Image (cartoon, rainbow, N blue to C red; front, side, top):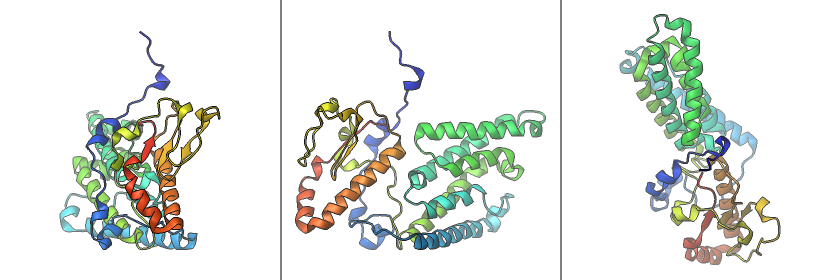
Length: 311
């Protein structure tokens, strides 16, 4: 029996999870609520970097201050907690400065941070069985950070500040002393950050870009299957057939479809970028062609297709 090479092995958890994830219903909520949850029915307006710098400063200031204020409560301070978990300073840069990055979306920030906290505390407890833990603390820190990184890659929840959370759980005596109490603190910090980010980032910008996945779940998971014969890929919108035109080296993006070569594997961050480009194409056509185009697209929405690897 022929076994695949190690470099070709791929663990795809999303194909088991996405069928059970409901499609977004934010459009059904009242406009003020859906707006501050990141939903938009019109194209996003591009902002200058001075405005982005201002909201990045204001958001990071408010987000960190809120966490510190809550952590100063007597109930939390009674456990010997620090004023703030240091990794949430790095998280603030992502959540308020680079809000369109897949690394800053709620799935990555919440799940990635929680997974890393579990890994960090677990590794610290394991190494804590050593009679001289301080002499091997550095190994525990490296192991916690490395293992957290690997798990985030497998679950597609990469969030760089979460690696610092796993590291701090092992190398910082104050954080190590918290033990499993670190988990609810991380969750609380994430929730506070997400609430403040939704309020501040949606004043002039849009956050989050998506809550769990950039894939359009309204078309069903079957539409995410790869095109079996790339050379025969064609588009519903009048795009000419790509056969004989070196199609195995092309990625085709239209306002309704994304077609990728059969051999190409994309990470979730990369598919998220392609989804954003597709949405912007759709929004551009919608704004340029007016209500008639919107009506036509709404009738054809069931035909929307994202032919890509289920990565």
